[in-house]
Length: 177
Image (cartoon, rainbow, N blue to C red; front, side, top):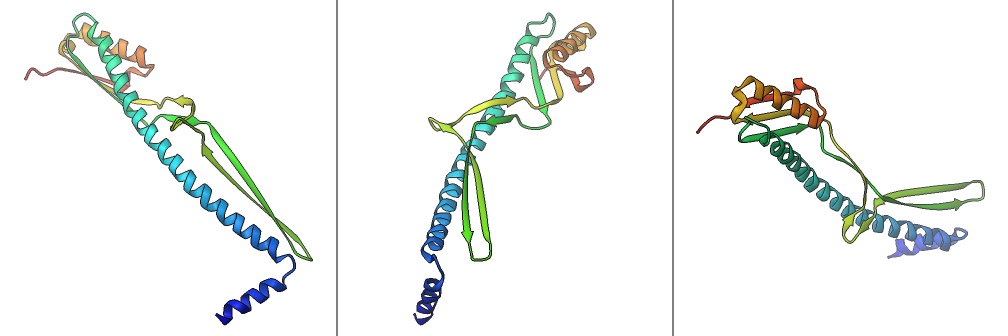
């Protein structure tokens, strides 16, 4: 107890100790507020990105498969598309900057803290732009793939639809189980 009194006396002997204590308290409160608030927003953004990546992949595979089904001789078809990464989302960000200045008789120190967090509207992160990842490979399994003409049509259709090199596409004949 006596040590606390000594510490308090030392703090009181410093000029403008009220300002210093106030700045420390404000800095701690701001750090706690932004660290707790920022984590929840980041978690929401990550969850949203994962669900969108899955739907993006499945949706693209279904669309390509649907188009290939309509080509004469292809028959039933399954498509698998692999990407080199996940989709990149550019989200709207809000940036907060907090500056504190500490003065002593000989010098003055200014400390700035900058934090950014995604902007959320109706519990959804606001996405400004979504960048598609690069496609690194496509596998097509089709009933009619044993016919060279059908195989060439599948190869051309997938290459054109996905804007990828034909060497990145593998076509296989569907097995009859």
